[in-house]
Length: 197
Image (cartoon, rainbow, N blue to C red):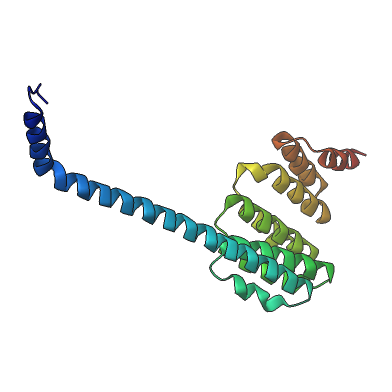
């Protein structure tokens, strides 16, 4: 604004500015407040949805502990929780000697998972169950699906265990060595030392 000599000129300049810019200021304020309210509403809905999924997960785990394997359907649309619940159910089934049922649960969880870490966990457990069922080729094939570098050491250890069960101690030694190269593990070192004896 220019320097005005009287108050009347200042008032007149403010009125003119308001006529020229008033609608834009009001619209900007309404849009800004609406966006702020909308964002807060969206965030509260997200938190509420996550809390509900968490509660459903807890209820599902309790149902699984009581022996209700059909409880997983409560977690439809929550793939992460559904996969975790399937892992718990599969663990319970393995403990009860129901390896075929455990394999089916793990296969279902494997298909539903999007996260690399959780995918690696599900897939390595599936490989172990296949190995327990004597399906070594299927177990090794499952291990090939785990591509995340964070799983390399564990995958190679399990590969070594499976190859050793098949009687291929040389290939098992190579797998254990690859596991140690990916990350130090006293268990793998012990397994490798046992092969050297």
